[in-house]
Image (cartoon, rainbow, N blue to C red; front, side):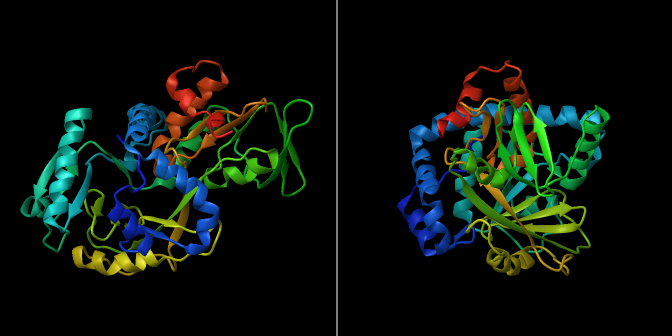
Length: 361
């Protein structure tokens, strides 16, 4: 219902600056290039501006379930999903009380359904837990996907079935001839098209920069590892104190961390995983790691917490669709539908105007 805002309370900002906590870590070497987008992110998180942004964000989030469900049904992909909600667990009673108050506000203001669990109720819901906790908020309506790659493959198969083609290539650059666009590939080939959509996540600004299109972006790196497990939780479990998510996946039990601000691109530094793992093993059984090293990926976050979707002014046929932050997987079908409406001239509402690349140009 509300996007991830920049910390505003002075003590929270101080904690972030000193590197306390495991939710956000940063590299000093990354700060010069990240300073401007982070400053804009901070300003956009001020209460009045944040309320305006959240109202637009909710209109996108409000559509995502139905947009996914349409594709899920048409792709025959329901087996990838669990619809048992999501549990946010607390070790500290005061933090639980604050989270419960927010859950009550979400129910009152937005109709989001949740249930507060004490330790006994939490242990009944998730018998795999081996540590007593203060309690949890069970967000009852959210769904989870045990195999995101499998779901995307099912969507891709549907795309091909409808006549689409998929070509995996590395694009070196884009040029604009007299009409249309040329995509220059690594192998020397060239593809031509009247319209081009830049949907490369964290890499999108790099392809746009040579075209004199400068888009500020906060790139938040996240990590996860899979572990062997005899019993998986019935739903995703977020351990707030550890800033870690325990997720039942096809590969085993996934341990996922928060956000790292690092130079883009750069070598992995999975300190957040290393910090979270001992606390995770206190709460739930983790076996041996499945992969030899953790996965890392970049979340493309915009300073105003809204994606960039629409036409690039003064460059006919050039479109953008990126910057969905922590919700690219969630918002993919909704953003694509909105972009399709824009390309065909059918979307002129306040949401599409708010997502236009022109707000940065």
